[in-house]
Structures are given as C-alpha cells and as structure tokens.
Amino acid sequence: MFEAPASPYLVPLNGEFKWTDAPTRPPENEPGKKEMKRQLSKLVSRIDELQRIFYAHDRHSLLLVFQGMDAAGKDGTIRAILNGVNPAGCQVFSFKQPTPEELDHDFLWRTSRRLPERGRIGIFNRSYYEEVLVVRVHPHYLSSQKLPADVDLETVWQDRYASIREHEQHLARNGTVVLKFWLNVSREEQQQRFLARLEDKDKNWKFSISDIRERAFWDEYMAAFEAALAETSRPWAPWYAIPADNKSYMRLCVADILVSTLESLDLSYPVVDAKKLAEFEDIRQRLLAE
Image (cartoon, rainbow, N blue to C red; front, side):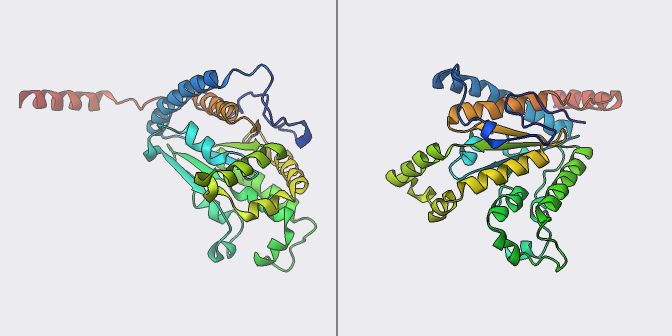
C-alpha cells in the first residue's frame, strides 16, 4: 500500500496531533522568494512529466484534498502546482453549501460522485471534511440533514470520523492514493489578506461578509481541525499541516510532497508486445511508401 512521503509537516499517523504545535510560518532558513519560485517551477515541470506517465500507466488515481480557513490560499495553490498539467488528466471540484439533492443522501455521497478515475488526478477544494469542520462548529446545520431519529448527537462526530477513515481506506485498497493538505494560516495573516481584498478593487469579489462571521469562531475551528486531523491522518490517507502564511513556501511544500508521491508509485508507460510492434512496423512502412 502507498506510504506517506516524509515531511516535517506530516500529521502524526497515530492520532496524536495538536494544532498549537503546527507552524504557520516557514523556518527561518527558508530560501528567498525568487529561489522558491525557481524551485517550484522545476517541481511543476516534474509534476507535468509524471502526470503524463501516471495517465498512461492507468493503475492508480490520485485524490488531493485541500482544507483551510478562508483566505488560506487553496485556490492559488491548486492553480500554482497544476500549472501546465494536461487538463484531460486532472479534475478540480469545489464543494460549497450542500444542495437539497445532496442533503437527501449521506454526507459522503456528493464527493464520492466526483472521485477521480484511474489515471487521473482529482482535486477537492474543500470536501467531505466540511461535515466535521463547519458542521461541528455550527451543529445546528445537522437539523437540515434529515438524519434518522436514532442518530446519537453525542457521538455523531466520532461516527463520522470512523466513516471517513473507512471510506479512505477503501479507496486506498482499490488504487486511489489520498493526500490531504491543511493550509494552516494564522489569524493575523488572514486579517491582512481580508484587508487586501477590501482595499484592492480587483480583489473585492473575493470578499464575503460570511468570512468575517466565521472568523469570530476561530478557536472553535482550530479545535475542529485538530480533532479531524488527529482522527483521520492514517498511513493510507495522510494529512499534511502546511504553513500557509508564506504562499510561496506553502506551494513549494505541497508540490514537493506531490512529486515524492508520484515518484514512489513506480510508474511506467505501457509496454507494447512483439505482435503489436510488428503490426506497427508494417503500418510505418506502408505510410512511408505512400
């Protein structure tokens, strides 16, 4: 089975995780912004190369899950690391407020419909984890989910963690590699990014009043992230708590983990057998003779 790439930001796989131990800033010896961009460019080229082999190999799918507070940089990171990747081999889905149809199903249904097929990279910008993050911070949302009367509201979160672990392990057994990234932005940095959105007219569209409302629940969200990551970072579906205050460093870390993962899969282009090669040679000769 897939083995989680080593990283200083790998969330422990044994259930021991404290959000207060997770840095939001890169280490002091980080390279400069120009050097990080150069390194990222090399990694993005390598991702492009590996993705083409991954697509042809057609034995695995890859699911990348991105979670984080508002303005953590999910959109920009996805765009940066997949810049240049063939769109035919990549799918991005963003999950917002559930629709009435989605609320008529279990909480994993809407994301299960969007899982990547073999040979493709699937990206979830937010995911089923919203059900143990936003919904845990605002438990009144459960009332709209039409849960059975015998659901125990005291144990519903532990039940959902168990469902997520089992879901991800099932995916892993069947060839889906699952990588999950918590883009860990500080409250202070989020404040600056919100101000930038308000002060720059070209960024006004990114701002939502609801973002400010959710900011008031910062401590509750951190507790929810801590519980979710501790309960669901496992060898078959690891979490990485990536420092997100420096966007260049954050993107470099995510790209490096992605490259390490793809390189570990022993990918190769399919080998054409001797009979097919003989047919190809015959066709080549006929084309040359035209």
